[in-house]
Image (tube, rainbow, N blue to C red; front, side, top):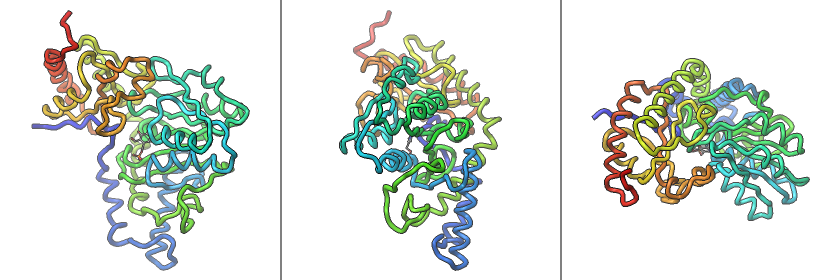
Length: 385
Ligand SMILES: Cc1ncc(COP(=O)(O)O)c(C=O)c1O
């Protein structure tokens, strides 16, 4: 059976060119970048070259890039690191953040920080009035994600950053789903801090970066040997960092071709599902969304059952209802859109990537409606109208 991978929001395969660039740094060029001998200098040069690649794609300076172990660490460093020098005050995040930001905010809350979770509208766009009104005199930071991993909605980041600055607060965005899929320029956005992750953009897992605007004061959350300008101690993940540099460069080069192609396949998939399956709701904004992300709530049935049935037919998709693997709690993101728990349980996410084809989308559109039909026949909630 041919299998089709439609779960690129969860992770992407490593591009063969990325893997090829990484391999020598496991075996030949294995030096520690902190050492002064030849192997050490080679590794240092490779880390510096990757830093220049990441900075160039984001329109940032090289000194503004800190390598981390991934999106989660970047988010933690952004929130905990930027607030460490203040007395506990107030911080703003959206109601639909990834757990990496949600839990970092909750940890700060346990240390005495007040946290406001600003609501979103039915399309998942942050309510600008509520956001603006949430600021207080002691608001130090607002952290609003660039693009949502469950529903795909893209936020007006430049506007959100402008408002935060007007109110005297720093602005962080979790751009883990955006970098590689959308143009991201830190100066156009005006953000102070921005998180990204390698494995969402055809790079390796376990490596990421935090953009830190010059002049933004940050304290490390991991202390030790003082690597990464003292902001992130620990011997650098040289192969991973090299991979991230190549992956982000390739993604940026291909974006003008891949972006529109993904959007057109995504729209074909969204329109196809909405036409062919009754009682389905599109999750997230119709157009202001990640180019490869389609998400739906299918009434009367469970996301997990759809996922497993589609998997049996060779399609790997995700259910939006699990906010952490193995959890059967409805997603806080889908609930924040105003859907009831029952509808939130029936969510499914199909996320396309650059190796997918229109034929695969069409094959999905053939396979999906009978699966829904079959599951509904078995569902006690379903009464055929
Ligand atoms: C929006 C968002 N933020 C953060 C993360 C965490 O990134 P990582 O897996 O690199 O820790 C993810 C990954 O699912 C994500 O989608």
